[in-house]
Amino acid sequence: MPASTIQLKSRVLIGAVATLAGPKESQGPLKKHFNKALRDDLLGLTSYELAESKIHESAIRYLLNKTNYMPQDIDLCIAGDLTDELYATNFAMRTLEIPFVGSFGACATYGAAIALAARIIDASVFKQRIICSVSSHFSTAERQFRFPLELGTQRTPLAQWTVTGAGAMLINKTEGRIRIESVTFGRVVDWGVKDANNMGGAMAPAAMNTMIRHFKDTRRQPRYYDLIITGDLGHTGALLLKQLMYERSYDLDQTNYTDCGVLIFDRETQKVEQGGSGPACSALVFNAYVYKKLLEGSIGRVLLVTTGALISKTSCLQKQSIPAIAHAVSFERI
Image 1 (cartoon, rainbow, N blue to C red):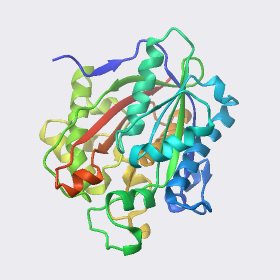
Image 2 (image 1 turned 60 degrees about the horizontal axis):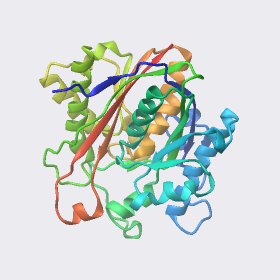
Image 3 (image 1 turned 45 degrees about the vertical axis):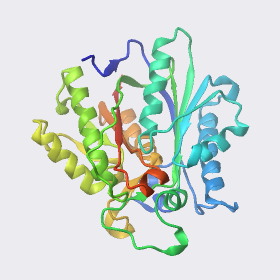
Image 4 (image 1 turned 45 degrees about the horizontal axis):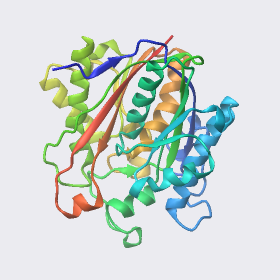
């Protein structure tokens, strides 16, 4: 069977990152790391979907301002979110005039976008610039996948809190101190979980599948990395992943392993059950926190494994189990 991991042949670098965090996220443990914080998650607009679109557009514009690039300087934007037909992303791109490819991998979308962008730039002889961006919003996700917000339905112990916010990353060949070293594209894994609130349980097997293939392809052990971080398994999902990996002779307890969904909220004071979820969860944590640690040199090698539960309103209503996927991207400081 061919290897799933692609080790990049050229220097593919992170040029810059940007983060825009919602009100609840801006009160969490990482509040000092975000570029911009929102006080109102509706932004005075008529719907939460329009608000998410504005948040997504603002993150991309903030990234452009940081880099002093104009939209016409960008060759491509690979972006996505959780809303129907990528509502938030499509509307965000209306005024940017950047070539655009919409991407859906549920909460794994950020990793998929980075992996695709890295491969495009690695294979090109041109000095391309690609923006990868994602957004999510608690209110748009909850009423799409679970219940109308007005019901005030009680959340289950295994539920996670969809992160409100957006993150954007510029990838290029010429500028930056953090290199994308390799990418491992995920496979769809379904272990029969049907509870739409138990996304960590559905996604942990997919994370395990991708991580084991990555380690086998690269002939590495988990301790090779200074930090291994999954996208949004949450507290129980992260514990399940460690158990699954241990049963297959990979001991994550011997590494600096954590989860973005665990880091972004304070579980006890913010009442988020298992922690954060959504495409913006991994984008905010990586861009605001992990990337800074790489730049300052406190860590040198990171494996980001974004995780996604590939459900829809239709599949949930039809009582289908939850397929999941995970994409891994290896970063190193140069």
